[in-house]
Length: 486
Image 1 (cartoon, rainbow, N blue to C red):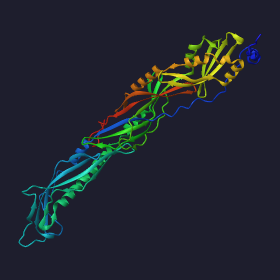
Image 2 (image 1 turned 90 degrees about the horizontal axis):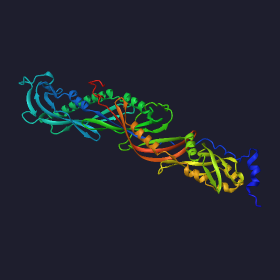
Image 3 (image 1 turned 30 degrees about the horizontal axis):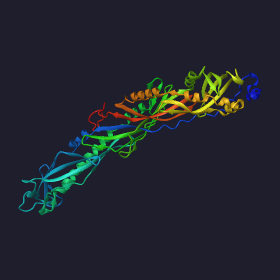
C-alpha cells in the first residue's frame, strides 16, 4: 500500500491542536505614503472701472491758461507778452498695456514794447503791441501728453504711475523780432500742470485702491473645507498667488490673478482648516499662468468594507485544491506595509487533512482598473510562510483554484462613487464666496493615479481636470475717492 507524502508531515504541521499551523507573515511596517498633491490653478480675473479716474483729469487741469489780458514783462527787457491757452478735452488711447493721455493746446499771443524795469521810453507812454501769433489767424498748437500704467503691488494695492512726455510742437508761436518763443514756456508751464494733476490722480488711486480686505476674505473662504455630502469634503488649500500686469483700456483696468492651490477631496470628519495668512502677490508674466485646474479625488475603501466585499464572495464557498475540497469559513483583509493581506479561515474537507482547519495568508498590491472602474488586486500570491507550509503538506494545496479565484473575484467597484465625488465637487466649485466673489468650476476628464494602502484602508486616487475661476465684483471700488465703496 502507498502512503500519501503529506502523512509524514502531519505530526509537525498539525501540532497538538489538530490544526494546520501556518505562521503569520511578519509586520511590514506602516502603509504607503500618499504622493504629494499636484498643483492646480484657480483663475481670478480682476477688472476695475477707471473711467472716473481718467475723467478726473478734466477737473484737475484747467481748460484755459492766460495772463488775464495783461502783458507780463520779460525780465529787465522792454518786451511784454500776453497769451491765452485753450486746452482741448483730454484724449485717451490704450497703448502698450497702459493708457496714453494727451491734450492739444491752442495758443494765441501778443508781444509789446514798453517800459523796461519801470523806466519809461520817450514818446511811448504805454506797452505797444508790435507782434502777434494766432491773432486773426489759426492758433498755434502744442500737444502735451503722459502715459499711465496700473499694477497690483505685493500688498494687494492698486498702484498707478503716470510719466509725462515731452511736449510736441505742431507749429510754434515765435515772436521773431524779439526771439521770444511763447510756445516753449507756455507748453512747459501747462505740462507742469498736467504732471502735477497726474501725480494727484496717482496718489488718489493709491489711497483708494487697497484690495487687501477683499483678498483676505476671499483667502479665508478658499481655505474653508466645503461639504460635498455623503461624508466627503473638498479642501482647496491655496498657497501662492501670482498677478499678471494690468491691461488698460479707456474704460477699465484688468488683470488675471492665478491662485496656486493643491485641492483634494477626502472622506470622514470635517477636515480641520490650516489657515495661512494671505501671501504677498508675486509677479507673473502675461500668458505664463496656466488655467489648468486639477482636483484630486481620494476614494477611501476601509478594511472593514474590503473584508465585507470579499467575505460576501467567498464565505461558505468550497474551493477546489487540485481535486481536493476546502471550505472557506471566514475572510479578513488588513494592510501589511504597502500590500493587502488576505486571511482565509478554511477547513479541508477530504484527503489527509480532512476536517483540519487552517488560516491561509495571501498578499497582493491594490490597483485601480480604469476600464472596469474598480479597485483590483494584482500580484496576489501566498505569503512565504503560507507557501512553505503548504509545500511541506503537499504542493497540491498550491495548485488549486483558491488563489486564482480570490484574484479574480477581489474586485471593488468604485466608478459610481468616483463620479458622485466629481459631480458633487463640481457643484461645490460653483458657489458664492462672500465679499463680492463667486467661484465657478467645471470638471471633465478623469485620470487614475493609483491605489495606496494606508493605516485604515485603501485610498484610490483619481485626478480630475477642468477649469476653476473666481470672479471678484469690483463695481463698488471707487478709485477717485468721490464716493464711498459699499
